[in-house]
Length: 300
Image (cartoon, rainbow, N blue to C red; front, side, top):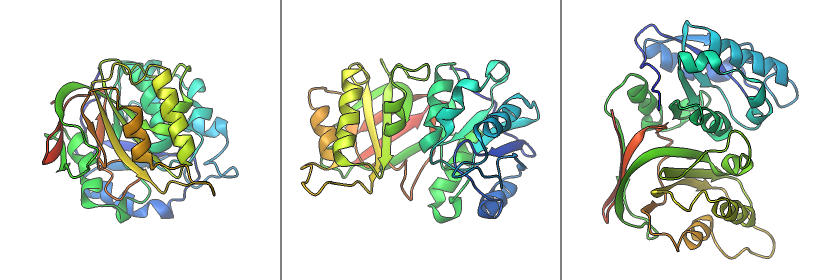
């Protein structure tokens, strides 16, 4: 995998939205944060623009992201907000210049479209909090992207206190992101090959039966057959029918992967959670689940 250059003080980063609309006012805490990091923010044309729920129409969102990809002065692109919309522009983006001179693409949730597509181009990306709402998340949410972007040693560690965790230690390339998006990309050019890799998944506000359906689809499509490990992040605010589905999101996942013997953890601090720590997708990692703690170490 190709690693984009780490950032230096004074570097310019583009702030764009590939999905939902957002205002400069909503971005003020984030803009102050990156100023404190010594970075220069360049707001894209999608900021303060709206087309119904989107940050401008498809053509504008495509052009805004393309301009940031092609601009040699821009060293990273931070997506401002998720929601829905990235898949509508992915096939119109030209990554030929980006592959020659890669830069960090940052975001999560709907940005999983970009993470997956760019993974297939052989370039690392950064799964981290959107520019929006950085100020209401944990210090680790805010600080972890800094550690990655400036090339510091980085790992994520938390207590292994979930009864569904399965012990083990493996190494491999980290891939994944939002489960709903991964499911929607199956069979498309943005679908990722998970063979021999460590898969991370997270989701929010899904029907429990639909989450089970998505996991069944991942299994039937072979995405779980040869993975080395499974990391389950936030599975929050799930919904149920009047007649209960009968299983939580975690119970569905545990049941579905019960025939595999790879290391497994739940409650990983990433995703639609208050503690949304950065993950370097495409990076070689060591994933360890013990009785006491879960550790994800990223190779330098």
